[in-house]
Length: 411
Image (cartoon, one colour):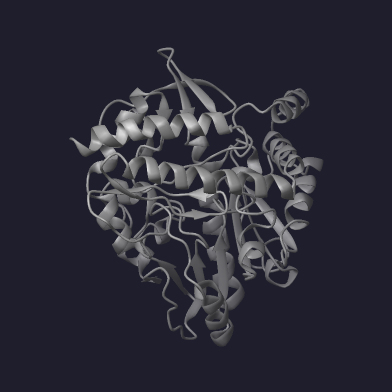
C-alpha cells in the first residue's frame, strides 16, 4: 500500500537495518509504539517538537482551533499572528510568506532570489540538505546520503545545471551569474558540522561583493538555536530566510521571508509566482504561535546548557566503554560521531562521511533501541532534545549508552 512501507525514506531503517517501530502516541520526551514499547525519543520529529510531544499549550490551542474549521483557502487571523511572531523575533526579517513544508519554503526562496536578481545560478554546499526539490537534491545530506545516493533518479541534468556545489566551511569566489548562496548556517544534515570562524561572515561579504543574495536555510536552526535563529546567534544577517519544523508546533508548515524590497517581487505584487492551497493553515499557525509564545530567552539558555552537559557526559561514557566519540554542540543542537580510532570533529561533508560510514552507528542505534532509547535511524542525523527531556532522562541515557557502546566496541 505504501512504497517501502514508509512515507519518508529516512524512516525505513535502510541504513541501520531492521524493522521500523510504528508510533501510536507521544508524550513529552517519550513515544510509544504499537507493540507497547516506550522509548525516550531523541528524534522529536527531526526537531519539530521543541516543547516535546503533545505539550498542553499546543493541545489546547489545537482543540480550540479545529472546532472553527481546518482549512479555508482564504486569509485567516492565525497566519497574521504567526507572521508577526516570526518577524518580531528575527533581526532584519520584515515579511514572510507561509507555505506547507521546509522543502517548499527553500524551493520558493530560490525562485524568488532568481526572480529578484535576474540571475540563474545558485551555490549550495556539499552535504547540506535543503529538501527534495530537483535543483537542490544534488550532493545533499540527510536521507539522500543515508540512501547512498549522489542525488535522485528522475532529476534531469537541466534541473541541476545551474546549481553549483561547494565544500562546506569554505567561502567560494562568486561572479555576477550567481543569484544566491544557499546554506545551512549550522550543517545538521551531515550529522553536526559547525561553521568555522568567519565562514558565514565571509559568505555575507562575498554575496555583497557580487550582488548575490544570501539565503539561510533555518528549517532546523530557526527558533531552536536562539530566539532569533542563526542570524542572531552568529550576528550575520542573510537576505532571505527559510523556516519550518518549530514554527508549526508539530504540524506541516514552512515559511520564507526577507526584506520588503526583496519580497515585493512575489505575486501578487511582482512577477515571481508562488501559491499553496493549504498555506497558512489555521491549525498549523495556531500551534506555531503557541510554541513561539511559550519559549522565553531563558529557555534557550537552559536547553543549551542541558545539551552541553549531556554531550560531554555522553562522550565520556562512550569513550570509557572502548570507542571514540565526538559530540559537537552548537547551542541546543548536538551531533554524535563514533569511531574505533581517535579523530577530530568533522569540518565538512567529506570528513563527516568517513566517520558516518564506518558502520558503528548501526550497531549502537539498535543497542540503544533495545534499551528504550530512540535515536534517528541514520548516522547523518543529529540528536534533538526537547524542553521535556529532564536531567534524570539524560542521566539514564548516559548509563545505557555506556552499555551500548561497550557492546558496539565488541561487535
